[in-house]
Image 1 (cartoon, helix red, strand yellow):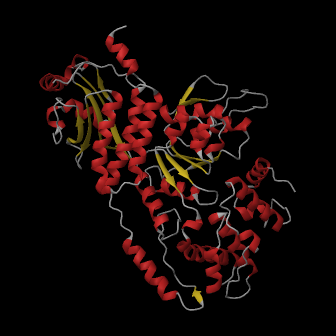
Image 2: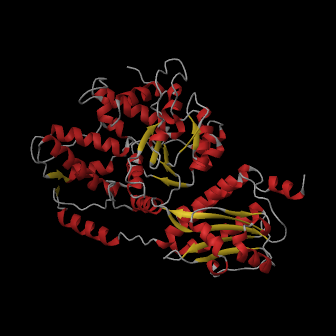
Image 3: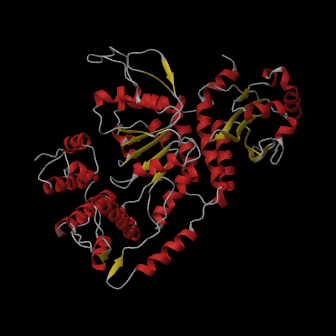
Amino acid sequence: MSAASSQAEQLPGEGTRFERLLADLSARFVNLPPSQVDQEIEHGLRQIVETLEVDRSSLLEFSEDGTQLITTHQWAREGVPASRGRVVSEENPWYTGVLQRGEIVAYSTPADLPDEAALEKEFCARVGLRSNLTIPLNVSGRPLGALAIGSFRREREWPAELVPRLRLLGEVFANALVRRNQSVSLEQALAEVRALKARLEEENLYLRKEIAAVTRAGGGILGESAAIRKVLIQAEQVAPTDATVLLLGETGTGKELLARTIHVLSARRDRAMVNVNCAALPPTLIEAELFGRERGAYTGALARQTGRFEVADGSTIFLDEIGDLPVELQTKLLRVLEHGEFERLGSSRTTRVDVRVIAATNKDLTAMVREARFREDLYYRLNVFPISVPPLRARHEDIPLLVWAFVREFAQAQGKTVEQIPKRAMDALQRYSWPGNVRELRNILERAVILTSGPTLHVELPAPADLQTSTGMTLEAVERRHITAVLDEVRWRIRGEGGAAQRLGLKPSTLEFRMRKLGIKR
């Protein structure tokens, strides 16, 4: 075996080493102020050089009109020529054209370049560049720039498995550039909200007027707290990219609503987002549901079935409760995330799709990784851009906005007019710990509107015994207690108008599955 081939096999090192690099860079950029992005990009490029054992790593950006390609960020080993600020397109027209088309440039020696790349060969000879691999960066179908790594001291082979890994890094850097270039300002809107709310807030009651809430296009996410503003800013930053998003948070915090907001703000908005609840589907059926099946794939498979990933081709798929995905299916999901391909059950033909994945969970995936209940490589692949959705108890200042929004919705649906909410009732709502989060708030307010006969809303919160903070309980214990309380309230009727499923905002089949999983019996 040649030295170059041996080196190529060792280039990526241990897969976990690269995945940790990806996770580290992703975490660095998630909450980073735009003013610090350039500094962190330089640090990230240095990490790439050290991890992949190359000599130089560069980030290139296209000009606004897309005609010029400029080296904007770079890190190189001592003695290696630097080219920060160089207009690459002037000396490398063939190279620039390939990247504009969204194609990869890779060569182990300049002799590998085609005849039309004569200027590129001259450039390599002049600066001493012996091997190069460049991954294009695209945002919403538009060429944004490229991530390039080069070797000057010796020729390098580029193994096939390195390309998808660099694409993942490219997504991280592309998102960083979008973050830096985006100006997000909510202060004016928030000032208007505060001023209007102050005028409406009186000694004994909150009057029902037009309270302006900070809302994102098509998302319906309400709030003016620092916690929810942070989440909305992150959603706006990642939406234009195709990066995988992982939504973390307790049950009932609005993760699906946030996923829909990200989709609406993306370039894929013209196609419907496909939802999959991984916890609601039996393990025996979830593979066919996600990836489809051929007729006769197993007993009872009487017809061909199209999977959710095929339906979501060109759009977004939302995988809710991803922590409940069976381990045996996690490998297949990882392949779709990395290569966009899979086989239907009962078929040997590979199907390729272009799908943006948003996943959500209320579980501690890092603990599940340690316990070998969740694949480490899948976790790192999903964790490209994590967003933590705060529980309602962490954003009490948003409760008045949410209360009025829900009260208006339910009053209109029931043909009622609710004009005021006593201050003592609003204070009680803000003091409550809300173990069921926004979903529980919504259910309590729906019941309150049903029981209200006049213009003043009457709210009944759960008994004091149920109001104790559940900090010492596990998430499953809190969920079990909340579901049981709702079931007791409706006399264990699951389906139909006013049933437990409707009160909890779940499908009856989903509620029944959760009851079996949590061991809830009458």
